[in-house]
Image (cartoon, rainbow, N blue to C red; front, side):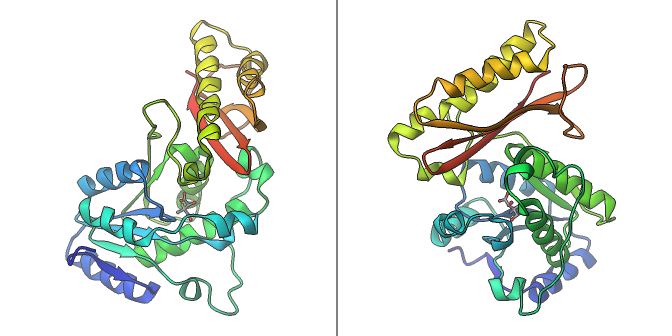
Length: 284
Ligand code: PAF
């Protein structure tokens, strides 16, 4: 790991460092991650680097947001590679709290956003978004960033966190950045490494489903049900793929839409074997 990267393991140490930087007039940016960094994360890091004087990447596999123990256990942990990538991309600080520092004995609080968490992934992963908003609040409190950068691949997460930051006057600008894709269109995800070569090929059905919906929307089709049917067919025709949900929602408040009258987004979740993948894209 680079000599220049500082690693903090407790919220107290992290905050003391950040407060000093803020007092000296530095602009602090945070890229929250659970590690297993890939080019998608690095695009967020590069963006944040250009916007900040002190750049913090947090790496914490947050048990609170996993609804399945096997998913938490299987989540890739690649500290050496992650810290080398952070060093290569000019990160100043890695905030990697221990589980005990994050959730000491007796921890009993929760941050929860209503409404936005009810559909899409929230409907299928009970408690997931409460886990996300709770940990992100704690990361914001420790890092005290002016700016926090998230990927649009987790579009619902981005909307939920933006809402939380506004509602709770957190004083953090939440920025969403475009989904970073492999050359063939698969959205980058830390979970992609779990796909077998066969599943990796079939995983392109998510992008194909979005392409189909975008093509129809581009031709002037406005009926959301027709778009969903056409997109779902792409998944159903793919061996080994199981559709968990596919929705057309208002791009801002995530309410399900019956027709494309304003900014809309298609979002879907698909299982390939034991791996769950999500993707989304704008429809207009
Ligand atoms: O998107 C993620 O990696 C996680 O949900 C986040 C935002 C780091 C919170 O644990």
